[in-house]
Length: 137
Length: 137
Length: 137
Image (cartoon, rainbow over all chains, first blue to last red; front, side, top):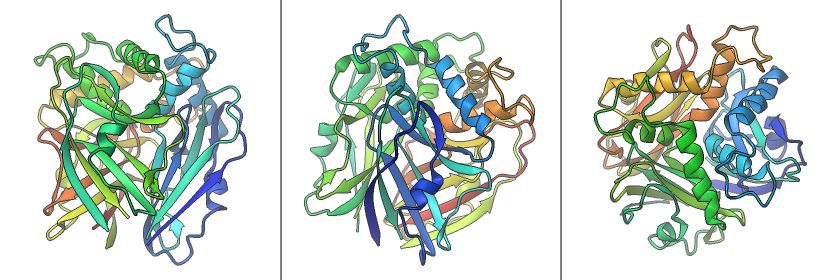
């Protein structure tokens, strides 16, 4: 069985944000013994990844690291007309990825204890982002 | 329902290339109300990712960025006998990933307006690359 | 049809390790003409990726490259109380990813000749890692 829905996240500031609960509040996993959920972001300047769900400084350090490793204003950028945050946003989006697939077991996401779903918002003013969620069970 | 096929891309030069239409020309999504398509590359020196489909300088900037962040001839490389482009190609392949999964909705890829499928060809002379496409509906 | 199982890998040292056979020894793909296998790691400081299965120096070079590009003791890290290897481990995990999806064809993983499944163990003492394997056929 396949279920699919499109949801719109509230706008987030530039940086990494835990969105596990915002995603879970939109879907009903009750009764799904075994399945997979695919969370896909319909944008090229924001990303979806899984990481540590407890300490907010991990998310701050993600922002610092990716700003250091994917710099603004690199001398070789040609795609600069949408602002200095734009080309790095595209590069971060592909480095981190635009979707995650997570097992569902006994009506719940089968994440590890410390895992949560991150939105990587890589634009200064990215606005609301759209996700397509597909559940196979 | 599961459909699977293996396709061979035409050879591409080193760099990033939009292959959405080349993939779509090989599959028939008509009648698939809801589904997922998995595009998998059977190589370790090329990658599949999703990014901006309009401005070709984004793809040029991808090549520049990943050449800068995954250098040729790093002093610590031991796997050098296949040429200076080989070990960076392996590293880029895992950084970017070897597959994407995309929702299908109403007989079409449910991509965002600006999203397209990129082949990252990381070898100087990679030749034709093989993809396995699996559609679940 | 969906099958799912959770397996525990033996502990691995910090670095990159080929785990294709350890994964395959736990599943039975016989009789699956067409399918997909999803391999998911339930941790935020280890990763799953696909890369070259033959020359062990590729895996050594992976460790060298990611240590260089995701340094320990970066001056901007705030999440430092679990040791210098911890925050880089989180960053490597999201850069490389926590799962792979691989086509199954004629009862076998449909990998390219040179592809294998890597565990990226990014902690100095990561211990045993848990995987959730989901097979759709």
